[in-house]
Image 1 (spheres, rainbow, N blue to C red):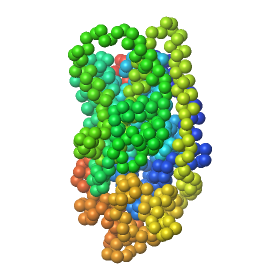
Image 2: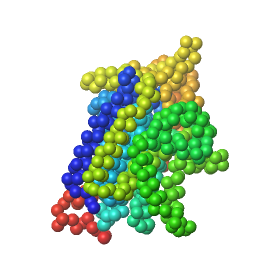
Image 3: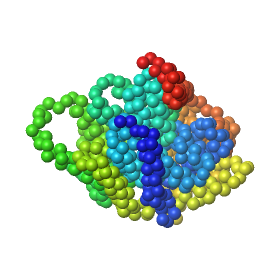
Image 4: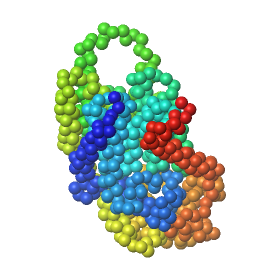
Length: 607
């Protein structure tokens, strides 16, 4: 049965009420009790100010291809983790970075709640209580909240996965070309947002989660080609919308491939299951256990890499339903010939776990694949199980033999209370001990917001050194943009976690427009990192003396002239056309949907 308007309104209000304990539990970590943030905010917080600098000079829709703020000149839009076109960055045009984090936390937790409620109630036809339970579980998943606390703000689009799945299944179940195209476009826009906003490394995982959700829906209804074609259409359109970002990112990454990093995985299947179950339903084990369970590591893995917690509630519900099922003596049935569809679904469910299990030949195969092979850790794909377990708990809740109508509501209240209580009581010392101090950047942000004559500029380069005069990777090194300096050894994982791939020489501390050996300026030409052939240079080259005008434009946050590849020019056109087409289809579908029934003939064109 479809949810009524009253039921929908109550569900939305319930989700809003959940934000109160949510803010009390997780909002207290951004910042923590010491006023500090997670260590990876050392890159994100200064990047927000850098984005504001570009916006203050060029306006909202001008593309920041490059930035002077870090490493003596870097790609901006071509960087796969640049979040200029993201909701957190656009919020930073109006409010300070700490407020941005709080709004992002609550907004995307709520969007995750709404998306999961719609997916369960509308697409999978669960009861209202089951939908509320699944939505609550997903909203409180540890991946989003703790990642945001540690500094992985650009993973926020993962909370849009259930909403994208809902729109995709709307496209599957609707009639008429306009409605199908409209809902498909909506799902594609959400998936593309993940790439454009800087979550490129998780875009394949988000697309896979949509495939898994589609397969689960077909398992409940019937297997046919249309849902898979709709899913493929969503992925193709999302790639088209984000083509400019994808082509630019691959052009940049191709200059600094990460193939030399080992790809860690679970040492054994049992260790992997233990780690996954603890991470999903309780808390991750201690760091010693985590790193013992993981083989083939380059670096030690920290707690936040395994924060997925949905609480014990779904485990208890699933265990009760499993026991009831076993009482029905399922072994007495004929299980000798499972259906092909069930095998396919099982393989899809196991895939995120499989790619995180270490076996030398399997690991070598994964390292040979595009995208996956350049990863240093595939554990983030396990976030797919937060979607799956939340949905499974909702279905299990409906499978319980309720004796009267009041019991499900009482059970729901106990379950929601259990989720809140476990999250409130979970040890958060790891996050309370984080030490990045955002005070200087926030203070500078508030100061420049008050200045009508603000003109951002990078004037010099800075090199931090230790007491012995050796180069130092200072924890707050990216903050130096507040004093109009670009750190030579900036925080930039593309060049390696210790900048092992960064061609920083011959940069030196001093004025950015200082000229020295070989007739060059003391600043990198970031176009050479992305389009070296088109600009007759190689990655790491500096601005030449005849490029003084281009250098000064970059230092003052103005666009400067450079050559793009032919592929980039084509991708730019494809992105604009696909974005316009998708938005028009979605808007037309929504407009027709609210029209009086007598005027809706066009909605079913082609039916």
